[in-house]
Image (tube, rainbow, N blue to C red; front, side, top):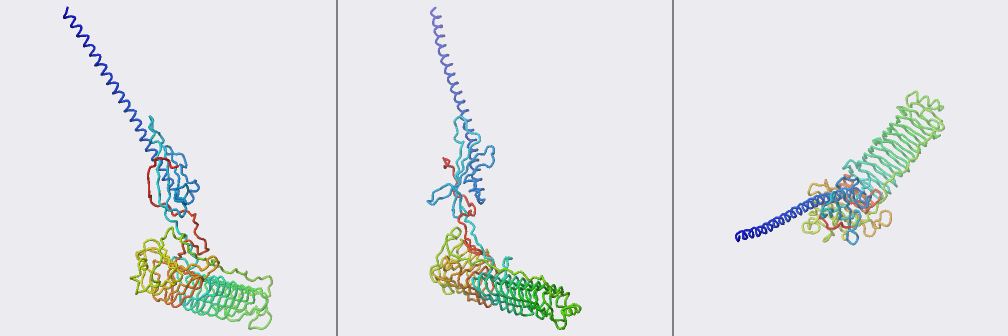
Length: 590
């Protein structure tokens, strides 16, 4: 009995232990299940957040790319209000990119870059297409800030329409003006008489807007010659284009003269050479012996011919027309408002029949009414004088500034020791050299090999036996600029210290591929075989002794020499440069 009671007690105690074990196992199971469930939820949240982060980052980066592309298009940023969003809805791509520039205080402000901007910032906020779950929304938004450098605005250079532009008359002797890029090497004279002589060759036209023009002594012109006054041509001259004297007569006084185009005179036309085109004159026309017109003649005054006209002749003048017989005089029809004078006496009808029957005139109609003379032509024009006023702002976006110091004259004796001069050869960035403390700045002799564009601003310049060349074989520009003495006054002003640009060295040369522009309201005087490559713009102009100019349009930064329009400071920049900063922000930047 005792034994049974003891056994039953043991069994009761064992059952209690088992229950405790089962409860412990169940607790562990519940804990494990909870941990697994928590891990699963955390994993899903993490995965969704990662996916959202990738999507929002991609959207923000797409916004930066869209803004970058838009900023390369002129006016696009302004048209969009300095904000870029998808033009059309794109699944999974939602961004808003804003453009920022520095304000006057140097702080970032919403806006679009102008030509003076040095950098631009884009803040792009991207949104995920699929947000995070389980409360994990950290990746739903991405905020990217990218700062770009801004390339300098392209410098507006408005070349004048001519190789040589001068504000007043002058003369050229033994000069060769040729084209370096297919554009004709024209000479434009704003006001004053001009003389081309002594074997000069002009690969272009000569235009005198207010004055007379004289061409003589084997001057060859591949274009036309036009003047508001009279034109005189003599001594073995060749002109490939037209001859226009809009306010005076035309005198072609030598049988060796050749005109490839036509002739117009506001007055008489006296022709002793060959004209391949036609001749029109509001006054009389006189075709001298050995003179030949290969097309027609129209005169306002009387007509006289000892030479030859291959085409028709018309004049309303009632003054008797003189026709010298022998040889063909007029190949076409002669229509005149008056009678006929010739070596035969008799009536006009008899004279006309005699000239026609002998083959000296194709046909004659005399005493005609209703005939008209030529229509007057307007005077030729050139661009107006453009005042160059030095303003560092026109250059600062692309040039650095250096002030000339030391001696104002450089030659063989000091070139190797002159600090400023030595620096010129080592410049690698476009540079403005302010030499206004010198009058003049003189380069007497030597060779200057440059590696970049250089602009000299000064009171006056003298170039001796100086050769300017390229050190790296690349084309570079060089300017010698004397600012106008009174830019507030229209027209050239050689005042207030403005001086000349002169050359007196037989070895002076602007060597290819360098090209240069010289500007002064005073005089450009070349002589002794100067070889220039570029343009010349001056108040007065003289050359002599075998000078040459190869026309390469260059212009002046910030100044349009064809009309004087300066660069617009609100013009778009030259484009975005490199990324200088790129980071993810914690906020949207608004």
